[in-house]
Length: 61
Image (cartoon, rainbow, N blue to C red; front, side, top):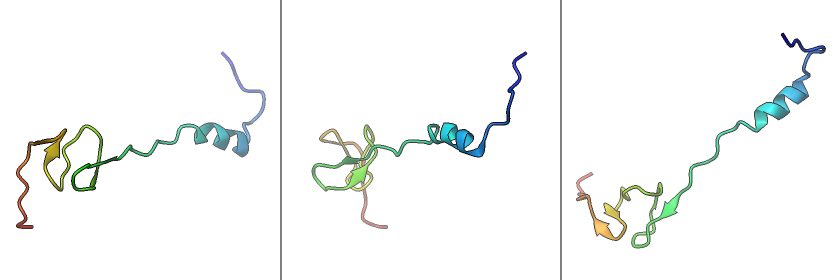
């Protein structure tokens, strides 16, 4: 069984862990309203997806 000969330093450990950070989500801009939303999802402001109205959004909020 492999056993490390020396203790891993804090710097080496942190360098290795730094590559495991999560990437920020990509954000798409709605062409009609200019609102931001996640790609491949309905725009929550307008209810549009790929140029079609798929949700009815009310202004009663």
